Length: 144
Image 1 (cartoon, rainbow, N blue to C red):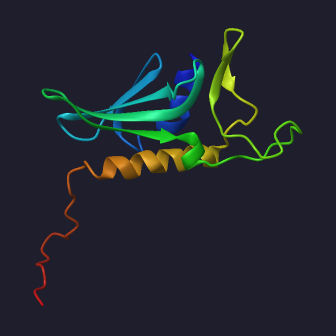
Image 2 (image 1 turned 90 degrees about the horizontal axis):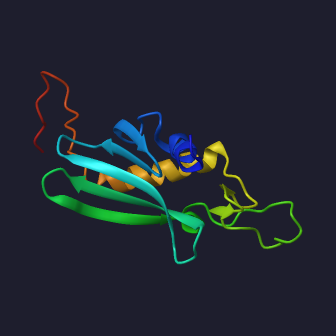
Image 3 (image 1 turned 180 degrees about the vertical axis):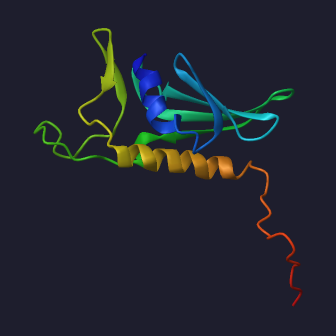
């Protein structure tokens, strides 16, 4: 399993954010409705081998990309304090490649960090999900 797949599994392997989760290389795919799929992938923001964000794309199977957004780790998680004295101001989480190894740079996100990031993805996807009617069987709406 690659580093990217391992980290994507921490976010999406539990099917809580979207269904029918599949991992392919650096990318995770899933469904939010019959024709709408989700693609999630780590991306760089202009610096080679420095993966600072997660790009989420919605894809219609017949029409292509519907919408996408970029969730920057620095915006979602903020700067994180570390014990390393070289980073007195903290560090923005990101994965980097160093000597053919991919790993989190200085700060390794916690399970609560992954939960926070997954919640942001879920909030974004909620805009595109079909509305769910929460009326109980046999109940009629009250008019006021």
